[in-house]
Amino acid sequence: MKDHHKKSPIYVTQPLLPPLEEFIPYLESIWANKILTNGGPFHHQLEQALCDYLGVKYISLFTNGTLALMTALQALRVTGEVITTPYSFVATAHSLLWNGIKPVFIDIDPLTFNIDPGKIEAAITPHTTAILPVHCYGHPCDVDRIEKIADNYGLKVIYDAAHAFGVKKHGLSVLNHGDLSVLSFHATKVFNTFEGGAIICPDAKIKQRIDHLKNFGFVDEVTVVAPGINGKMSEINAAFGILQLKNIDSALARRKAIDTQYRTSLAGTPGIHCLPEDSNETANYAYFPILVQDAYPLERDALYQKLSEHEIYARRYFYPLISDFPMYRGMPSAAPANLPVAQKVASQVICLPIYPTLNQEQVDTIVNLITAPFAR
Ligand SMILES: *Cc1c(COP(=O)(O)O)cnc(C)c1O
Image (cartoon, rainbow, N blue to C red; front, side, top):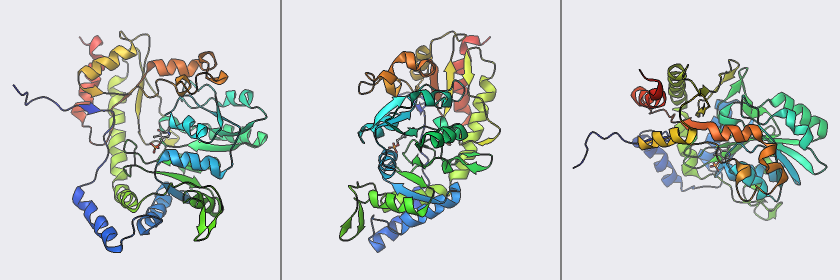
C-alpha cells in the first residue's frame, strides 16, 4: 500500500528556482536576437549587475567555477608549487594539477577551518609562486596576514571564493582581496546559473586578458595571443542569473533565519559544536556545518546514518580531505601528520540542510533527531 503521508526527502541543499513563467520573456528575447553565446547582451548585463550587487570593479563570467579557477591560474602565469588547503571541494586542488602545478597542503585554523596563515611561511620553497586559499563555508580568510606574507615573498594570491557570494567584512566585499577571486554559480551554491562561475578582477587590463583566455585566446578575428580555453558563459545561463539576482536578498534572509533557528535550538547540546558567528561579517549562510565531538553519544558517521534513515541527506563536507584522494595522498604535504586539525575536523563535520525553501517544521525535525539522545 502506498503511504500518502510519507514526507519527501530533505537534501543538504535545493536550488533556488524562480517561477518558470518569469523566465519565458528572457528566452523569447534570445530566440528573437539569435545570440546564444560569445558575450551577448545578457552576458554584459549580468556582469554589470553582479559588479553592482557584489561591490566589485570587474568580473568575467565563466561556464563553471572550475574552469574559472584554471583560467585564473593561467592568467597570472602561476607555475611550480602553490600553497593551498586540504579542507575544500576537490576542484580547488584539481585546478592546480590541470595546470601542471604541484599543490602544497598546509593545515587549517581550528576555529575558521580556513588555511592557518601561521603555517604558510614554513611551506614556501624556491618553487612557490602563489597561495590558493578558500573562504571555507563563506567565512573570510585572514586576508591581511595572507597579503602580508604574499607581498614579502612576492607570491600571487588567488582566492577560491566559491562559497563567498555576497560576503562582506566591515561592510566591504571580501571578493576584492588577493590578485583574483573565483566564484562558482553551480546549482548547489547560494547564487546559481545552473552551471556557472566568475573571476573577480581588480582592473580592466587583467579582465581583458581573462576575457581573451576564456575565448581560446582570440583578441580579434585573426589574432590568437594565448592557448586559451572555451570558458564562456552562454546567454541562457546569463539570463537566468539576471533573474536569480532579483530573488537573492529574500533567499539570503531566509537562509539567515534557518541559521538562527539551528543555532538557537542546538545550543547547549553536548558534543554538538556550531561555528561561531563573527559580528564584523555579513555572512551568506551558504552552509550550516556542525562538529560531532566526543561528548555526543553517537559517532559522526552514526549520526549521519541516522539522519539518512529518516531521509535527511546531510553531507560530510569536507570528508575525505582532498589530500586523502589517490592523486594527492603520496605527496609529502598530504601526510596526515602534517594536517592534524584538518583530519580531525573532517572526521567530525556534518553540513546540515540549509536552503531558502526549507521550512521551520523541517528544521525542527532535523534538530529533534540530533537532540533525541538527550530528550526527556
Ligand atoms: C563548487 C566549488 C568549486 C567548483 O565550482 P564548479 O562551478 O562546480 O566548477 C570549487 N571550489 C569550491 C570550494 C567549491 O565549493
